[in-house]
Amino acid sequence: MRGSSEAVNEAVEAAAASDHFRKGRFFNPGVTEHRFLTALKWMAGREIGPWRHWIPSTPGAKPPDQVEGGALRVTWVNHSTMLLQTEGLNLLTDPVWSRRVSPVSFTGPQRHRDPGIRFEDLPRIDCLIISHNHYDHFDAPTLKRLAAAHQPVVFCPLGLEKPLRRSGFVQVQGFDWWQGQSWKQLRIHCVPAQHFSGRTPFDRNRTLWCGWVVESVHGNIYFAGDTGFCDVFEALKDAFSPFRLALLPIGAYEPEWFMGPIHMTPEQAVEASAILGAGTAIAIHFGTFALADEGETDPAERLQRALRNREDGEQFWILREGEGVLFRESNA
Image (tube, one colour):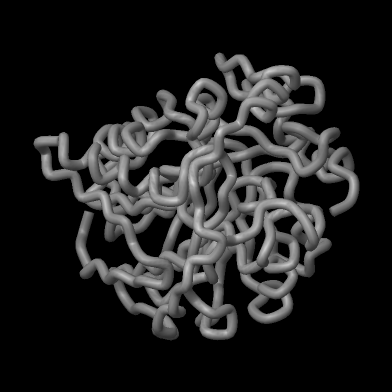
């Protein structure tokens, strides 16, 4: 991708009045970010939990072409890639089908299992929802394939419009936090997240990061992207409750002293779901790429323990890659 400064220029006018944009960079209000030396301290003392080199899996069944009416079908492809099907529309979040999530093909984090759905088995994709530009969420090769094969509309945070158009997309809409737009039978809202952006050592926070709310008369869907635990969940509950479904990250949290501001632990994800009052939560952002220091099975095991310790019968699901679940039509 070219020139992060060029990408952000398109967003400057819209972001100028934001409480999270200053001197050409976005930031998390009220949060002190780690300095470079702190990152070096983490990297020098890393103790990475065990991962199998390769986890055999069988691709899931080909999803239906579409799901009509207020029924909702959700398929976990892998990592933070979810296929959402409702109202005759197919939405895809943070799509990644590449073997590595890195600037180059020969090094960097590599997947430990195949995507749960073959790319060629995807139904027509009408919409992409992008949370930020880290390589495990903004995968240029996959984006180019989707532009060529499906040409969906793309909703993204500020600063990613030009990189997406260079990938071949024609309909690209960039948003600041708390902005939204009606699209087809839905309304798409860009909402805050506590995270950061960057694809090189020189472009940190030049583009925005976010979560998304897909608003429907049948109940709202929250896709958190990447976020630390913060007060945004209370604000989202006030603005968008009731939530039919919340897609919440549970991985890349170790060591917690370093990752805590930008990634939730499984226990915090359970608490976030409770705050949101979500009818159901589904775990994302784990089990595919070894991005932090926890082991392969740690996030799911900690999530299951956290759920056993709750008395409210929290519905927080862990899906297999390629597994699809159908929510019957409901009225919010």
